[in-house]
Amino acid sequence: MKRTIILLLPLCLLFAVGCKKDNSRISIFAENMSGVSKVWVDPANVNGATWIAGETINLNGNVYTIASDDDGFYVANTSVPLEAALSAVYPATTGSNGNDVTVENISTPRTVTLNSLAVNFNGDGHDIVFPMAAYAASGSNKLLFQHLTGGLKLNLTNATATSLYSLKVITYGDGPIQPVILDNITVTTRWAAQGPNVPTGGVGQIEGDYDIKYCSEMNFTLMDNGNPGVEVPTSGGGLTFCVPVTVCSVKRLVVIGYNASGTTLFTKTMTLANAQSIERNHMYPIPSIQIN
Image (cartoon, rainbow, N blue to C red; front, side, top):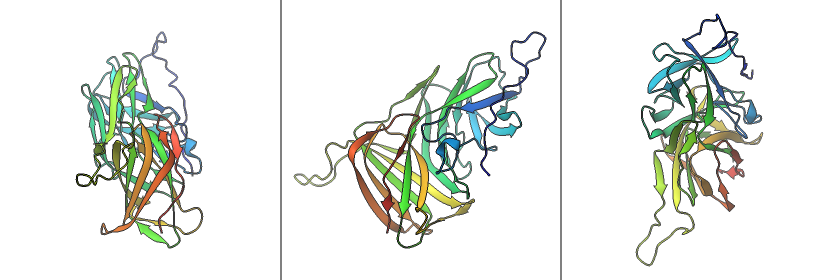
């Protein structure tokens, strides 16, 4: 059953006369991406994504767990008073539901480094982290998270059923990552392996595309209801999922799939007709990739 967010504010407004402030609860909301938002995604209806209770958020360098009730999603915050400003980053920690993420949210520059992310297919859609950040001024009781990246909607198709356990997606483009300025904070989101693309080959034999100067290596583990590995079906449109992308343009993709032992199953290269600019808070469908 699809989960939805109930966007209700507490009945007790912060500045109402005679009304006591709730200093232990911060309501959390997120903007809708043009294609996907938050961490639970239905590929057939990517605008229906939502938070997941039990995930974690970093508030001023400290980790807190997302909870939910009839009033929506929130963080029970007991160590940082609401009278102080909050800088929030999602996700918060390495090892959260199969994700390997490093977060710096104490001082500038604030950074989110994605080492590896999990894509967990759950029957209705899939769980996937899309990094976000928020700022709450003194006196606020809510956090409005905004996306830090754009996204790619990938579709893998095949002629022979394939058990896929991990995936590497390397994007090539003509621009580096750019920090995102949201309200009073600046956050840079990057994959661990990301930077200038140096052509290979000996002197006089240099290979590569001189128009493609930057690359980003994106690593994913694939799961089915929390169990390692997922079947790529031969019918029904294959396997469709959404992933965050941190570079500002994509011209070429290399997609590499691995089995349970780490052996390469396929390597596919796709060059787009035109370089696709990537904007924060936008989802970009990529043509289907035939893996066998």
